Amino acid sequence: MTDFITKNGKVIPLNGGGGGGRKGAGAVVAGALALTVAAGTGGVTTLGGPGAAEVGSGGSSVRLGPRKAEGQKAARRGDAEGAWQRMGMKQLRRTVRQQAECVAVSFGEVREFFTRTRCTSLERVLFAVTDGAGNTAVISVVWVGLASSGDARRFQTLMNRHGSGDVHPLGSHLLDLGDIHFTGLRYGSDRDGATVTVAEAETATGQVGHDTLDALAGVAAHLPRV
Image 1 (cartoon, rainbow, N blue to C red):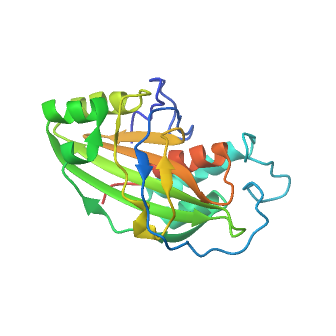
Image 2: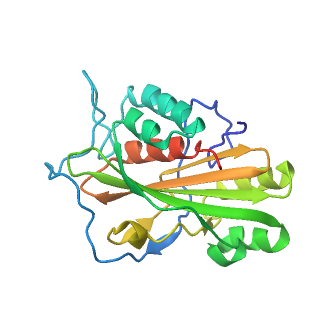
Image 3: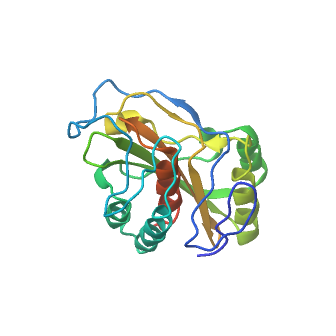
């Protein structure tokens, strides 16, 4: 895979992780059923292991980078559950992939891009992952196919820019989650030829820190389109 880029256009190595900070997809209205997870303490999610530092509530950890790199390796092999495990999380459930027409499920400059540039395919999926202590995250992954690698490069640059719009994630009601607002602040993207992968992560229940969510999105962006 090539060209893993943060929203400000800086190229980073594939094991370096993703950036965040662009306008998200807006509110996602979900169903009424609560996702069943183990009862927890209500504290922030931390990455386990001896000496692991807290990564919730704005904290950071030098141990997060190596875990993220290992998670990205698993993701590139198509092992989503293994990727979450390397991040100290367990997959609870996922939706099936759903295809969509690009213009119909996008907004802002992203939608304008699709009206001018042919999109060959678009697939979306949602994952719910937990730390087993009542803290749950939901992760949206979108694969967008373009007609050429040049189109894909331009699309990724647009997506990585704050305030450019977005592709709407699937509704979280498909995972029986409450109202989820995807802000785009915890975000990762990757490009492989003419395909761009975009991932976003948000807290569903309990407290999952910003750094952990951002790392989860950075890992998910490396999941291959199959």
